[in-house]
Length: 179
Image (spheres, rainbow, N blue to C red):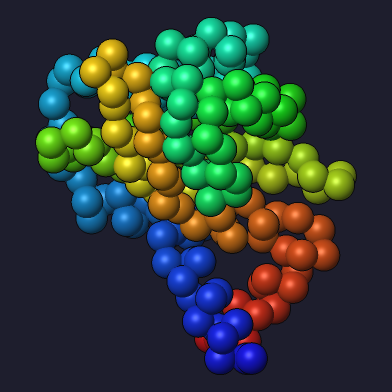
C-alpha cells in the first residue's frame, strides 16, 4: 500500500512546483522566442482564464468552447458547455484573482498544446494562498474554432490541494518523507 501511495504521489506531482524560484528557474531554462501574433483561438482561451474574476464568464465560455466537449483540468471532468459555465462561475466566486501567461504554443494537425504559467490567489477555510503553477493544456478545436477537447496537465497537488488546511499538511508530510 505504501509503495502504491508513493507511485500515485510521484505521478501526481510530476508537472510543476509552487515555489516561485523553482518555477522561474524552469522558465529560464525553456526560454524561447515566441511568435508575435497568437492564434486567435488560443488568445480566446487565454483571455477567458485571464479574466475569470470578471462577470463575462458565460459569454466568454460560449465564445471559446463548443456545446459538446471534453474538459478535464485534473480537478473535474465535464462533457458539456453549460456544466463548464457553472463550474467556472463557481470558480470565479472562489478565487480572488487569476492570471494565465502563455509561454509556448505547439500544434500538430488538430491538436494544440499550450504551455502556461498560472497565478491564482484564493482563501480556503481561512487560509490565504497566492499560488504559481505551470502546466500544459491539450486543446482540440472544431471547424468553428471552438474547443471540443481540453485536457490539462499540471500539478494540482502543489497548485491547489497542498494549500487546503489539514489535507495540505498531510501532503507535505508525505512529500517530506520521500526526500
